Length: 311
Image: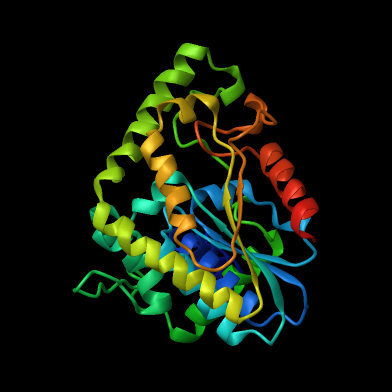
């Protein structure tokens, strides 16, 4: 059965979106944030903890320029791109969402990031590989030889429109999933033994990053520059540690938690700091896995932040 042109374009767009979802998300959010005409807007940067933990619709006008494993360096590049291109006073607050390990992370020194994240997302957008000397080359249309540029452009625009219609990272195109294969169960349904076993694995992986002291020292300067840049643009800097499960917190190195506070103390300018792990407001149903919030938990966190810092 032959496809008509509409069916062909629809399938091509869906395939392109599936292969390049993260790149298209980041590109689209940066473009939309940079061109917003709404004053009092909210900017969000961070890693998967921001993608999972921040519900944009809780704010009047929010843009989530976050990505899985995104480090502080690319957080800053995202914010700088937006604020340098947006109209004056469009943004009034910026949430910098961190996991403890982010203080020690440098994507440009990561084998995984060099293979996937930087070539497919950050280099095509920013043409910046930070501490990596060899610029990668990645073609989002690889494997589709023979398709005219006009059709590719049409499909890209259609894919971007699909993302805009969803309005948030997790959607029918990218369902919210646990970091672990929970065999069809939800986090709240696991036994305590299972929760502790998974938390020890996850926190153990993050604890390994604690040894990257040189990256930590560089990140201290990056955070200073980031906060200074926000203040220059009259944007309120707010560092947020989202809630993690008690099990994950138990196995996370105390020294790594202390290092985040030390990093913030080294910032000479005012910066608000919210750590959601200093109380017991969140239960098992608020989590999708060891350190990522469920949709319910994300709405709870976002609503609290709105109450604290405005809509």
